[in-house]
Image (tube, rainbow over all chains, first blue to last red; front, side):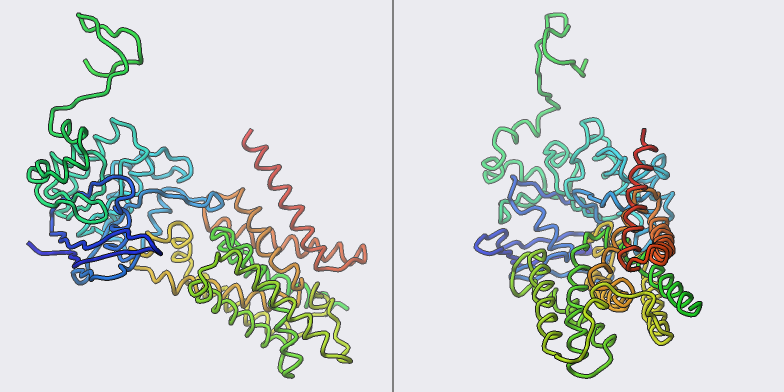
Length: 250
Length: 263
């Protein structure tokens, strides 16, 4: 399989702080690679280096020639003095290999085309950003915490969509995620990051790695178990909810 | 007299045709203070022009463009906030300009005409220079419009998509420097950035697309120039401040209109 981006011993230092050290990794064609790690682990810094938005302090990054990258940033803060409809926002893309309608449809955002960018909900904004990332028919899709600000049902749909997109577009995906369930079930390769690469490989290998278990502990144990949801209420013997909030399962 | 009026009107229209779209870019990029800094440094350009006995317009353009190009590297080297650096650059160059002008003893130079401009003193030669510089800037701006809007909307996205963001940033700074330099003649050093910011902000709150903001800013700028000139002639007040006050009135009207629309 072709390697799209590889890094060798990449390190990043900001002032006195070591943000990343000794990162060597490969992103391969049509593979979903996920990056997990605690807050402050340097996930976004790593993504920015891979995208050539920041330069590493040392080490090297090699990108395949003419690599088409679609990037979905963590947040979109468009100045409110700049009025933009969704279709105009997509029109700002430097290169388009598909029509705006096609991209919107793939991202599940067709009905948002005429909306103002400033009036979108968190989930809608993410879908529009995904559409913009898809416009260039990317070989590599880079998603930095795509589920941020998206409600639980929306998150599931979004992750499902990402898996589907890999299959329809045959693109590689790099995704920074907090959702260990999805990461372990649906991605091909996991990078567990905490300033350095703690462990790296197939989800099954990673999930039994001591470094992973130390880093994620309790959370990790539930990640491989079937879906467990947090209860803020109790159930009576016949399943009725007693006290607490509304229950969404049956 | 009619010649003077026509020149003044033409100068005002040409200037706001450029300050409209350029001002919207400044507002979107939150560069308001930047325009101010360039305007302050224009006075240093005036003084240098007098000292070196070269065309004042050219020396003002030179100083503004050099400052625009120098600020980025200074920001990187010094590590200080851009905000603070802009303040320092603005007032250092203003003070230096004032000192340099005062040293030209007996030159009979009227500082007021540079600080406040005089649209009614525009000559045919001024008009030609203005048309070339403002017209050229506007043409370059429009040719790069989509890229500049993309930059203002999301810098990182634009960069990942392969836009030359550093080049675009330098381009927009140089364009602002050019327009500030030629606009100084008309509304003066102290008020030129008002002409960039006020119509663009007023138009922004009433528009639904980036292009509508730019066109609206130019339209509001034109109304301000005409209204300001009429007030200046009728009430015998200086034209520069009258134009800016007229723009401010339109801004407050836009705020009211927006509130009315929302409710």
